Amino acid sequence: MHGSTYVPKSGLSRWMDQRLPVMRLMHDTMLTFPTPRNLNIWYTFGGILTFCLAVQLVTGIVLSMHYTADTRFAFDSVEHIMRDVNYGWFLRYVHANGASMFFLAVYIHMFRGLYYGSYKAPREIIWILGVALYVLMMATAFLGYTLPWGQMSFWAATVITSLFSAIPLVGEPIVNWLWGGFSVDNPTLQRFFSLHYLLPFVIAAVVGLHIWALHVPGNNNPLGIDVKSPADTLPFHPYYTVKDLFYLVCFAIIMMAFVFYAPNFLGHPDNYQEGNPLVTPPHIVPEWYFLPFYAILRSIPDKLFGVIALFGAMATLVFVPWLDTSRVRSARFRPVYRQFFWILVADGILLGYVGAQPVDASLGGVIPLLYVGRLATFWYFAHFWIILPIIGIFETPKPVPDSIAKSVLHATPAE
Image: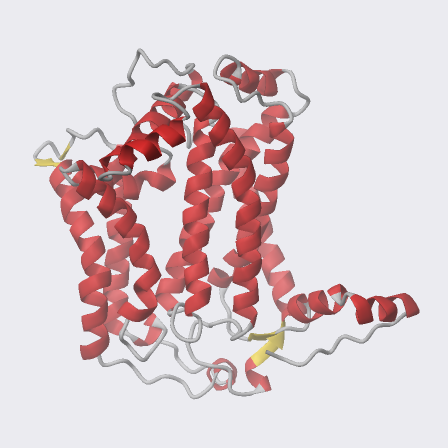
């Protein structure tokens, strides 16, 4: 925490500051907040994620004005948005591709946290809130994926919700409550639409907590060392506002390239056919950002244990601050952990590939992908529950710099 430097410059601002110091809060958290002077490009994704959330909120609210949450009209209402609403095609493509960009940014943000040890004390709550945001994003995206009521929408809703039936005793009541009956039908769509509209505002509230928790200990940094003097920091504005804005524009250009030139590249063609409960698609596949967890689910032969593995994979992330036993935060000074980190990244990509393929597919026509998925699933859990604690005990880290300023100003090698 740092002392406030805000000085009201008018009678109105002084009056307001004594009653509701919103301007003081914005000044202290967005302008003068002392930020480590060595933050790199990977630390810009927090601002990019805030931008993505704002885009999804604005486009989602406008789209909801034209959408009809009824199984008889939902598919046609989406076509109405695309064809008849002024710039409806643009709003829908921004919203759909914005979800993918949102998840791309959040995956980079999470892996950056894992690499630089941003989950370590005193930032455990920041990390846990981040995991909660990730789970809320997944729930919101799944609910939104069902709304167009295409073939993939309908069958994704059917398959995913039916997984809860594997839970002993309470599974069937949960499924019936989600469906609003005994099958995926009109009550299901209306419930999913209501929740999809509500959850982004919950996400915005948790983002506020996430930022609040961040401003208590301050930003982590690539060196993973604490701020020791004012020389280690810079005011957030103009140094990081300009830097974040530059990379935000670069990110927006990539996003708009998808919107204007390949709007359906990340979607599935079957979703342009109206949902039909009598015709099952040959290969039901979720959006790309669900694929690693979908592969974990499919790799377990038993339905109940598959559901346990699915939720366990997400719950595992909550315990990372305590599973990592190393006293050094950043992987820059942890040569052994750094190798396993990149193996984890490759494992996540492999799980995504496996999840995108049919369940009976094989690797090179020789190795069934089912076994590859099981091996990748085992490695995912082993990384966090076995490898991470052991590395922290036996690894010998490299020497850590004395201060951020000394490392930056004197060009001390970081690796």
